[in-house]
Image (cartoon, rainbow, N blue to C red):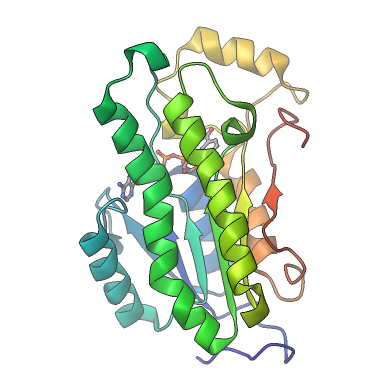
Length: 242
Ligand SMILES: NC(=O)c1ccc[n+]([C@@H]2O[C@H](COP(=O)([O-])OP(=O)(O)OC[C@H]3O[C@@H](n4cnc5c(N)ncnc54)[C@H](O)[C@@H]3O)[C@@H](O)[C@H]2O)c1
């Protein structure tokens, strides 16, 4: 399955797609959406599962091995979705360096490492789409979430910079910054917090993973995604209006 060169026929199905964090939540919904679209999808995740290639996105060697395994299954990667992430909570004044470092390593360095694995090949082939899952907390901040918000703001900055580097080779890099979405990531947050959060959302409810996935499909689509460069889309129930 070859890629089309820039300016030739649309390339919107049958692509090799890698989704990190695709064993759960938003990543799982995105992997399913690409499969339904007729793409060939490989899921990379720390959580074992059928057909899942194991990876710890925070570890360089693990990322290298996982992407080699993915390429062995589907060939050169056309679309990368970085959805692997974790969320912990602590006021900054009580936060251990270990907690800070873990979040930055997974939620920001992991995105860097995975992008680095694929971007050169995409540029050589003159077609690629990279979609990084940030968070609206990277834009507005969040109490007890300085590490997470810093990592996600970093993802937005990384996305813009890599977009500038790669756009001329028809490799388009964008981010999605969801608002609160019903996934295992937010299961641990108190019901009181969730109720208060719902009340302040213009839509009055959290989103569902399958309501985020179409944004990833759009950004990856040709021609629908062709003019998005370094953007951050916000499926967020109205929580942030940039
Ligand atoms: N759920 C929300 O409200 C929300 C809002 C905004 C952004 N996000 C972001 O969306 C992404 C997906 O989150 P989700 O809500 O689907 O959570 P989730 O917990 O359902 O899924 C996250 C997945 O990432 C995997 N993962 C975690 N650390 C990893 C590592 N080191 N290496 C490889 N895989 C790892 C987990 O095993 C899990 O399968 C995350 O980046 C998260 O920060 C979530």
